Amino acid sequence: MKKLILFATLAFGFSWNSQAQQKEITPAKVGVQYGKKVDNSNAVTVDKLEKSLETSAKFTGKVTGKVVEVCKKKGCYLTLERTGDKEPVMVRFTDYSYFVPTDLIGKNVVLDGYAKVKEATNEITFVADGVLVVK
Image (cartoon, rainbow, N blue to C red):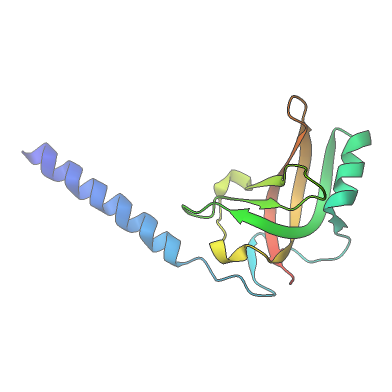
């Protein structure tokens, strides 16, 4: 019986803690930052990122683009729009140390981090240290 009570208490504590963290995510407005501090200087577009990855295995720097999807559970990833019918750029966050709100969809952001192309699928993945809402 003691184990059952302990388990229930721990389960409640974990669920309460994750809900508390969820409420702390700042709504997406111009100038809001998530993760490490980012400025919008020298950011390249998603198209220029693609071109850079055609000649190099990895890109390190800043990328700007329009958010088309955010993880609905807790904002643990987002995707950036690409031209044509190409798969969006998948963006995850360094060590999942921060999350973003779902109202980021449709906003333009600047990401700072690194990108690479998955050989088998030709999908671009980006790991962001920080995100800045710019529009």
